[in-house]
Each structure stands twice: as C-alpha cells, then as structure tokens.
Length: 172
Image (cartoon, rainbow, N blue to C red; front, side, top):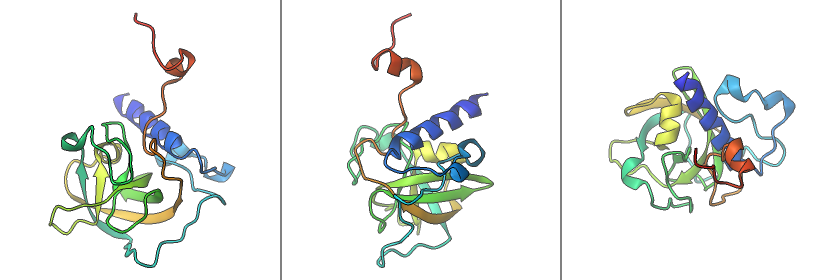
C-alpha cells in the first residue's frame, strides 16, 4: 500500500513538471510504466552533439544535504522533487531511466554528478526512491524528449483536496 502511494506521488510530480508536454493516448499508461508517457510533437528526441549519452551508466543519488538549495536549472530541491543531474544534457531534457524492471521518465534538473567515482547520472532522492535505488547502481537510460525548464519542473502536484481548498487544507 505504501509503495502505491509513492508511485502515485511520483506520477503526480511528473505530470506537474511536464505541463508543456502532451501525451498521446497510446503513451498514457502511466501506472504501468511508473513514469510519464512518451512525449509527442511538442517534445523532441534529439540529443545535443556535445552530449555523450550511453544506453547504460552508473548512477548515484543526492538529496538531504541539498534540500532547500536551488539546482543549476533553477528548481528548489525538496524531498518531493523527481529528476536527474547530468553534466552535459540541457535543463528540461527528458530521460527514461530503467532499473531492475522499473522505469521512470525524469527531467534533467541539475549538473553533476561530481562524486569522482565515474558516475554518469545523479538521481534526486525522489527519483531514486521511485526506482528502488538505495546505493550506487548501473541504470539504463534513453533521452526521450524535452520540456520547458520552469521553476516547478520535477515538483509534485498539490493533492486534489489542497487544490479544492485553495492550496491549504483545513485543520482537522
């Protein structure tokens, strides 16, 4: 039950962050993929010439020591932010990440990793948790598009209850 709530939070976070990317009906099976559907015509699948992206790579994760600080792309890092850091991909690049049967599409939100262990990716703690990652691991990656780099990219959507209450829940 707890894992389903986490998956729902991750899906909501991706939907909030991907407000400028439309999803085709064929790509809208969010629950089955654990992430966002494939972007359509408003997103591109091209990778900049400078970026060296391999189909797999070493991933670390970051979070608690960076909460409350802005990422290189301008987002405020909190436990609920779902994204990835990469040294060369532009902010807003959408990357499909796979690990042990779990997949998640995440935006590039930061630069890194800078751990000096040869890692290619640095997942936010929210992305690592959604994928079941607790340590340095090898992941599969694929650039699947881009979205606008906005300050709310990677943040979860407010709950329907909070939205109906104007953003604040009544004390109970």
